[in-house]
Image (cartoon, rainbow, N blue to C red; front, side, top):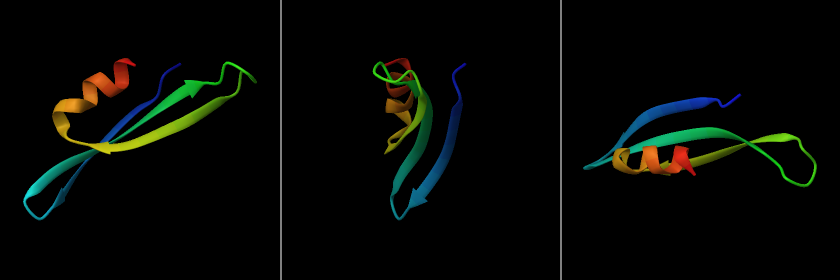
Length: 49
């Protein structure tokens, strides 16, 4: 049911990751994708929410 995609990005001296997760809307019941760019340490917390 959940789709998890993580890509690592490197920009200059910072190392970032882009995480994409599929979330079910409580109003319509449709699925939508939520994307976020963050540090690699924060990816697990983002996917658990």
